[in-house]
Length: 137
Image 1 (cartoon, helix red, strand yellow):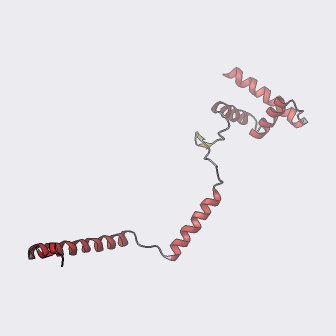
Image 2 (cartoon, rainbow, N blue to C red):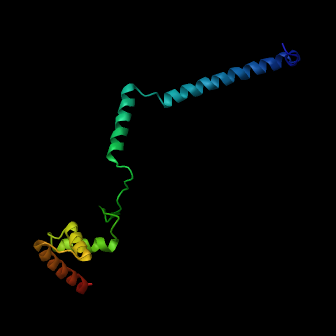
């Protein structure tokens, strides 16, 4: 025994033993609480978690972002709110004028390319609808 332990009274030794015993019980209790509140997963649960993670990972392309919603509809973030409004009004006027058709016609006009005969007819309708929208505003 060390010299310090020799000088301890019996009461102090008893107090130290009780503190060590209490600390051991607290650790045991803490460990059993963690096991009961967070039980370990079964093999099936671990496999399910892995498969769900793989599925989620495969569904989301890297670098993709959620599209913004305007009035509950997902819209491409490449268009402004005004452009989206105009496209919706155009679509409401004529079902043949889809967003892709309008974009093709606009790109052909911007790049100075010739439209197909069908696109020429659609461009005439598009111009008429745009004139109505401008005069109605």
